[in-house]
Length: 256
Image (cartoon, rainbow, N blue to C red):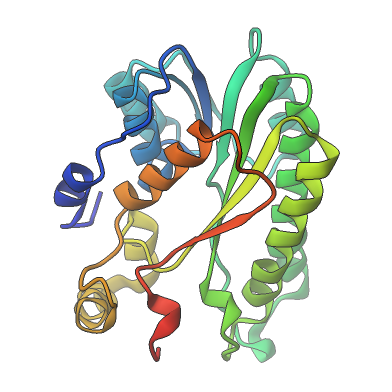
């Protein structure tokens, strides 16, 4: 992890819920939020199944966590994704999907085919997870999707990401009705200090961290452990479904 906050954040947010005897599938589980959630699942007594695109990184994560099994593939391949879930032995308790990255492209530079894949591919991925999970996730278990809050504020280059940000809560609510009693929830994160953030920001990362420390009401940068702690709570609390849960340190309350 790139975040200098990840160690202290993990200490502050050690999982309080127990997942003893439960199995959690993490799609996008080799880095960032997915990997940190898998760590907290293990610390809470649960088992993990990991899927990710990067086979080398996936092996390292699996070795660290003693994962039950792994599968290396691109989650945007919906046929492969459904097959992966369908071939899991027995039932699982929860499925977390972190795969995907935001698109920040001005209108004049947008490739329409890429824009269609960015938007439609993400929706299709989550629909595939929901369809395959009906036979694999126990009643009362949860599908948990990771989205964002940044697209709620209109800005240049945010057309695709903004549309996806608006779509995901509606998708979540509708799926919560359609595949009940399996629960479906969405975590909408602001800036999270992950390897993905580092790759997107490059040499602007430190400046972004400094700005957030000075402006966020919480006075620090949100790390993967913060999001993972929320994910575990949503898994453990079986009264929660169909809703979107923001975690951004108050980022939406202050000027960009």
